[in-house]
Length: 257
Image 1 (tube, one colour):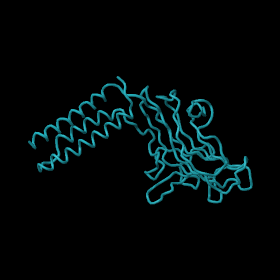
Image 2 (cartoon, helix red, strand yellow; image 1 turned 60 degrees about the vertical axis):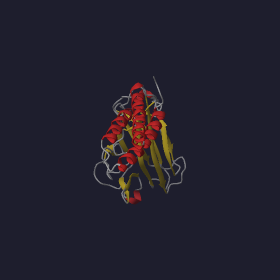
Image 3 (cartoon, one colour; image 1 turned 90 degrees about the vertical axis):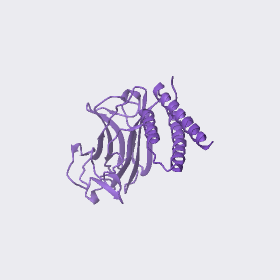
Image 4 (cartoon, one colour; image 1 turned 30 degrees about the vertical axis):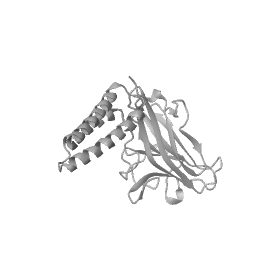
């Protein structure tokens, strides 16, 4: 038997909310602490949660306010010492990763800077992998074809550069137009359970008089595994949740007779 993952999520949330309200009313009226019933609900929801989404990018939101699990490269060479090429922008604890080729601010790149993180494509065979991130590209260049550009791609240990469809290309192709946005896309299922892949955010200097004056902010980088369907065990949990609701209702009605 197969049911929708999102149907289970909605049903579980509704049932749990109803059951918790009933538990709170029933047990607080009797002056007793909530003990057994919440434990049962917790176990049932843990059973349902086996199909929940999982975040597969460590420190993708930069909330550690450092570059943990991120690699920095200047002109293709690993860059670990503090510099103006890479920085954490900290807005009262809300942190973002910054890549810069702004020479006026002290950046040292002659060609490009890259911020990279290793991907974990571990997922069940029936899953969909969804990648998302937020970006802001700004600076003083003129936006022409010869201006500073940024682009995003996957790369692997063999040097292949691909997009979301696993074909040669980019996730976001090279653009010299300043702006911001949120990127979200489902990846080709051939990525599932592959290893040795990296997500690269690249900022490359241009060839105009105003080039090497740009920065790229990155935030909320996330890779999620979303099951396309779930099988019988979560349905069993839903039945148990329903039975618990009926039991509590009957028990409460008997007490008021």
